[in-house]
Image (cartoon, rainbow, N blue to C red; front, top):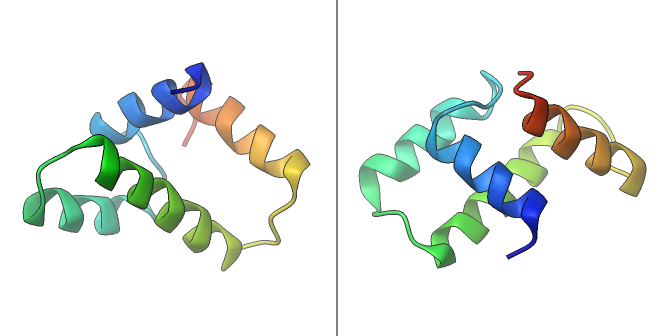
Length: 73
């Protein structure tokens, strides 16, 4: 897994996400155990929920990952 993906996965597990995404992640965590397969699913859901807030482009996806690595919400 890429370093940025690992950092994002770690932050998802620690619930260091935006308030918009957190309820969905908590619901999934209470239903399914964490594995590499469903972490991939969580990332896809995270990107889809962000696209409902503002348009996704390669430049702002990079910005999203950088913000998550810095611990911003």
